[in-house]
Amino acid sequence: MFRIVLLGSGGSIPSPERCVSCVGIRCNGRVYTFDACEGLQRQMMRAKLSYFKTSAIFISHLHPDHFLGIPGLVYTLQLSEYKDELHIIGPPGTKEVVNNLLLGNVPSFVKVKEFEGEGEVYACDEFRVSAFKVKHSKHSYGYVLEEREKLKFHEEKAKALGINGRLFREIEEKGHVEINGKAIKLEDVAWKKAGKKIVYSGDTVYDENVVMNSKDADLLIMDATFTEAHRKDADEKMHATAKDAAEIAKRAGCKKLVLTHISSRYKDIKGHVEEAKELFEEAIVAEDGLEITV
Image 1 (spheres, one colour):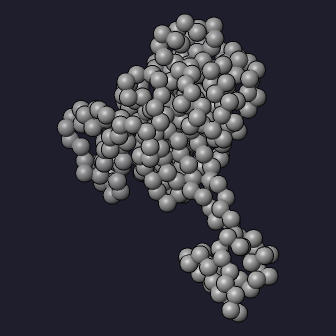
Image 2 (cartoon, rainbow, N blue to C red):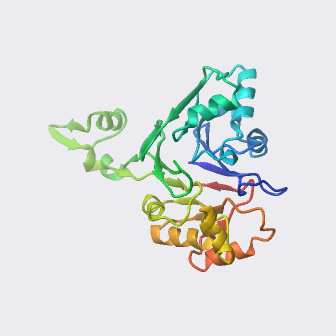
Image 3 (cartoon, rainbow, N blue to C red):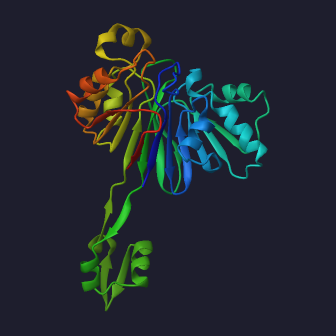
């Protein structure tokens, strides 16, 4: 299960209501963030996401509103004699940015990884994270978090074949067991259940690559900086509108859509809501602190 909190839902400039872009995810006691908004620690405290449990930060691109929360978090962890590793993962230039933010004093627990191109960038026991290219600035990426498949047993069928107790573990480890001279394969009594899929678009325009990578996602967290009333601004600044986000979610077959990176010019989000729901009913506009469980 993933606990997802919108730590920052605003555009490039913060407002009294919205911090800039950041999503926090808690899984199996650990915390991961997609981008790192200024004021990250405070936002995490408000959301009851322990920054002492932070394992990785995924940076979508190197505009300051997406990474200014890093130095404060690292400084606090350093003062607290942090014993774990903090992975900071991002596109080319991330190492230089982190080094500059920390004035050349990068603690040994900070592990910076740069990548260029699409593919897997992080993996743990529970899930894997892959990056995909989006159209915004140079080296801009979105991320796909995919939970690992889970093995599920047909309990009645397994019981009828005499599989119980330690035999469940044995057949899971070996792929087969023998009972009364009869070989029973794992696929005879079990199946793999697909894990959850969460997509974070980062900053982007409408892009077929976002559609492709968001296919069948349980949750798409998508740039919707503007409404169609400001389409010219969206195109010039290379951001998406609420309509763009809804069209992507609809075409990709997503289950739920969260619109984020809302420009500070909007004091009323009614236009975003109406525009998105016209195409995709399961759309909501993020606010700081919005929480979703997947």
